[in-house]
Length: 121
Image (cartoon, rainbow, N blue to C red; front, side, top):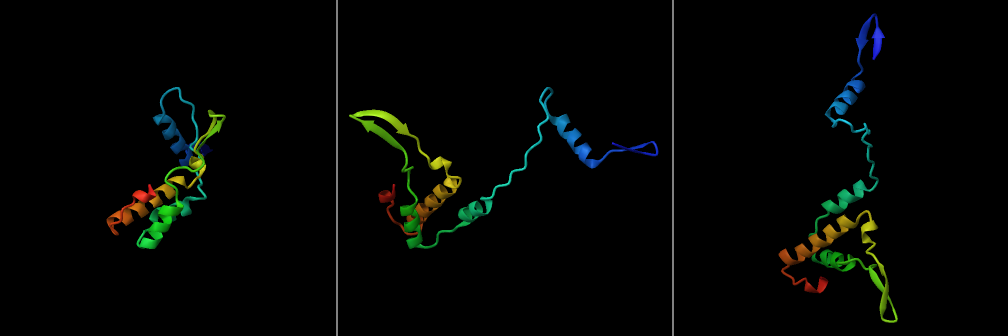
């Protein structure tokens, strides 16, 4: 609040923060919402908008992108399971986009080309 000639001026930034606090439930601490900056967002959009219109490209995508995580393993010693390595694909920040791209490639092969995709599953 700024005082000039005995008049109070409220800056718009303060009005917004007061309104946000008023909508929060009683007793909750005020936490500012952090702005997210995703450096991979352009690549995500490009992968999501990629259209499959070529049979060879669809075959390539279906072969190169695995159906399940290749890193998941059970470590067996003397016939007993001693450890399990969990699937690490979820650590890939573009995992969902690649899975969606593979799915679209398989759908193209079935719907447009009439192929049997059981060998890819």
